[in-house]
Length: 222
Image 1: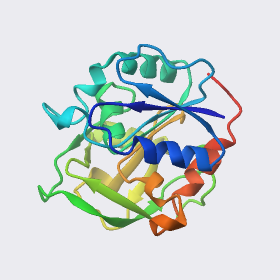
Image 2: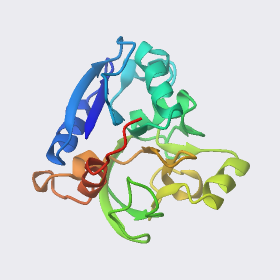
Image 3: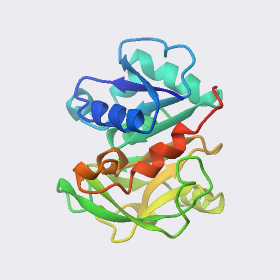
């Protein structure tokens, strides 16, 4: 399985994400934000965490205008797989690939710790290695992780079983305790917690590794 990891000025989890993909058996290409096309034959695009463009203006808003993001949007629109983590989740909402927005944490403080997540659905390639209802420990590190969507959108996410992960003890005020969501075709995942930081025993936990092991089994290229 071939993965591409996008690198923006300010990305600081791009290599972590690449290592998580590689340890799962994926071939990884790093892609610069000024590139206008993804490498040929890419199965999945990883949009990493960090502070793209220093989080100036609004988290992910400037990165969403980078040349590579149009290629990411095109990839998603033709049914390609993508995962956005933390700042990557913010960027995917800013591009419109995923609904909603990430606001300042309810407590207006940066939060960095491992939290308990409930797997809300196992019906996606990202979560199929878990059982719905499982509780896993995954780190968070964000100031703007408060997921918001209007009531109609939240109802649609819940009715369509598109909430991937929920916080057990909501740390940031996210609506409906949402920590991660799926696209309508279930091929794009956005989540604030960092599964790539819980993919190796040396990190203090491996609860996130199943996300990448499942992705490595993908055989369908878009």
